[in-house]
Length: 116
Length: 112
Image: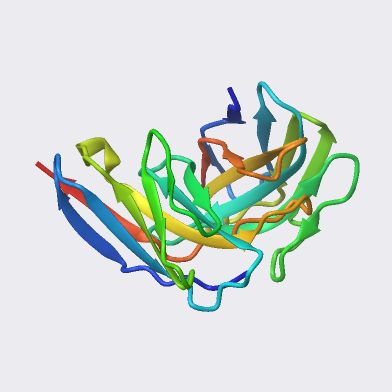
């Protein structure tokens, strides 16, 4: 149990286009989901905290108008990278906190975005 | 959340125990120690967590010093598949939906 999926697993797009990444908790409900970004050979950096039915909370330095987050249900959060540029190329990872647990977060497998 | 310090890399022979240290000298009384690992190009995987008592599960053991200023993650019989970056994180255990703050971690290389 406690599986989190991400779709797509990798995506290549042209500069200026928008890309949507989905994060789903497959067998549990998650009121809170987190989005991280990881550049090569670096650690994960939290981008935003997404709560179901409310606006996401963004970390300092993360542009909310560029990285749109929608947490419309208890099992789905989406991250849309708008007007992507090569510097947005990164590994994007989501995690989900089960509804009645504050023990462990479950991470998705990640989405590798390459912007040409 | 308290900051953690880990060695950037370690090697371990296959079949031997891997002991990964973590310093968290500024940990406060209500903060837990969590360990995650990340295999290359995958999402992090939860390993174990503890407050002050030693903990053991099917993956690893966690030894926390009496003053809680440091801890050691032990993989009793490391395999090649244990090669990964191991992150030690301290955070409060509550229902505030706390994020995890990842440091640099320790890159463990298990060698044949």
